Length: 439
Image 1 (tube, rainbow, N blue to C red):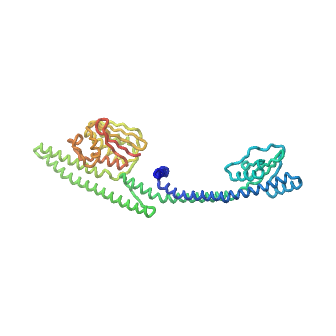
Image 2: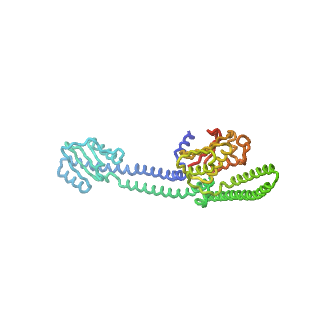
Image 3: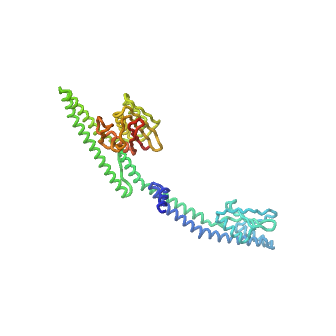
């Protein structure tokens, strides 16, 4: 039962730190105000209203007794005094029907108190109205063939402190909650900034500047994140520079070897050595691409249609079909995505004769399919072929050059964008690569 209750609260509670903190701050304040309000209305307002109403009904009873008494001269004198000194207005309506329906609000403490006191004194021979007039209450008391009509100010049965109390209990509460919202916004902003910076860095985006701020614990976490980010960035830059230097240094002797092979008289030996040198050059290029594809590139909102169309233009003499929806705009690093799709297209054309690219938008993602009609990959190898430098010695790996980095680079690019890549059997009987990118 406790586990089910815990899951229920997890579902209904907000997910963000700001709103959870606001609930922690605001809930006790609201509960305290409710308790104070209940206590006030029960012990002060209702009791005061009850005492004032009872006193007023006693005055009305006195007026009624005087009015129905035999001394007409005394009656008029007292009524005039009440009208003058107590803001009463009293009149007798003869030969008029007495209203049957009581205009009472069941939710009003004032109406309930007035009904209770009038009923205890006059039984059912009364009627009152507290809503028609803003500042005046009307009471009718049945007498003979007419009724006695009495108007008196509403403040005689309603304590004026109720409105003042409601004002003072509401305004400070709203002020305190406003201050709490401002304070919580200021406190949660550094956490939000840190989370955004971590998300951007995790996706391989370049962070120009990150300034730690906020409370000491948050600032410390931000400092450590910034130090880690700088160490990783330095490491990646050093790796790229090292491989770039190695590639440059190795190209020079490879070029000399090519020149020397061109002078060899044994052309069959020269041809075999030349093929080996070209394969070494391709390997160097792939190593360099693997190290440098995560360079500092700005994220942009681009139309995926344009990227796919640019890629297909490079393969004019190849059989490439594409089908894409209109206006597939997405926020990505365009050169990285282009490199990913080029790798997948080259991979498909290397092992097959036909490649199809299909892209569509779903509720939260953009999905891209790259299909080929090659021999495909065994299902047990799906997880292995996306590892760096892995090559299978079967249908797709036989007599093909390369070092096994094409799918690995594509996988890293997609994952650095917060997406995922999966392999499956293609409708063309080859390999299908499915890419999902978040919008």
